[in-house]
Amino acid sequence: MKKNQLHVLQTGMTLIEIMIALLLGAFLLGGVIKIFVNAKQTYGMQEGLSRLQENSRYALEILSKDLRLSGFQGCISVTALTPTNTAAAPIIAPTPTSVIVGYNGSEASPATATWSPALPAALSGLATPITPGTDVITVVYGESCGGYLSADMASATSDVQISSSNTCGIAVGDPVLISSCNNADLFRASSGTTSTLIKHKNAANVDVPLPAICATPPCYKTTAEVFAYRAYSYFIRPGTSGEPSLFRFDNTKAESSSNPIEILEGIENLQILYGEDTDADGVANQYKTAANVTDITDVASVRISILARTSENLASQTLTYDYNGATGINPGDRRIRRVFNATLAVRNRLQ
Picture 1: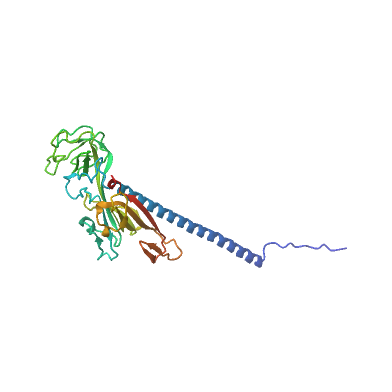
Picture 2: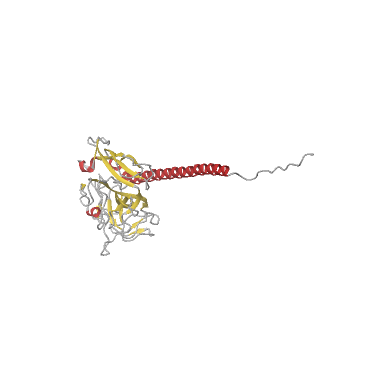
């Protein structure tokens, strides 16, 4: 007779099996972490590049809009008639030589930075200096805002009546351009905001005649139009975050906490060339820096080049770049930089 044999089943895991499982788990966990880190880096790279491209295109759009409008004052060209300027300072009067003006920056330290031609006092005296070596451009124009006259001006001192409540957003003290096909005047409004009447009194509360000479009333008919007057300068300087930024200064106002305003950060450099039309055919024959332009009234187009950079170090190593004729520039960081260019016709010079 055979004895019953007891079969003891082994349960659990041996030490070797546990170690193998831990090792496999570590490999899997490492793979997951690597995938996560790579995905995060890829997302950061894509987001940074997208923001860089978006900012650059928006900067070009803003500059393009104002450059195309430079010198606009309604149905009469600034080359045919310079408006009578009765606006109190600070103001840049629209003339053939002032509607677009460039300043070429030299490569120097902030203490010795120079521009050619020299910057006006309003720009050279800014509390935060403009970045050395970057260009500056000023454009002047009348911005159309539906300010059509609803009644003739019976006399040169009559109020300017527009058809709808101030769509131009004109406030007291704002510069206003009124233009017909025969006359144009620049003045500061002594009323505005929600009114359909725009008054033109001086500091002594005396009406400023518009135009200065009105031999045959009405001085301005309903075919005339009121424009919001713009005189903007664009330049590069450090923004509130410390990043280089594109700024816009309103030359019709003094410097304040809201003037200039920061448009976009991450714009590191601005370089501009001016296309001179030397044979009066409406096409630029040669492009020059602002310092080398022979006659600013011959400028038919403008070539803009901006250098934009990401706000963070996204590259794995330092990347060199080429810009404004220089090659292999080493910035000493791992930011990604891109160059964006645009060539624009100065339309109101082509009339």
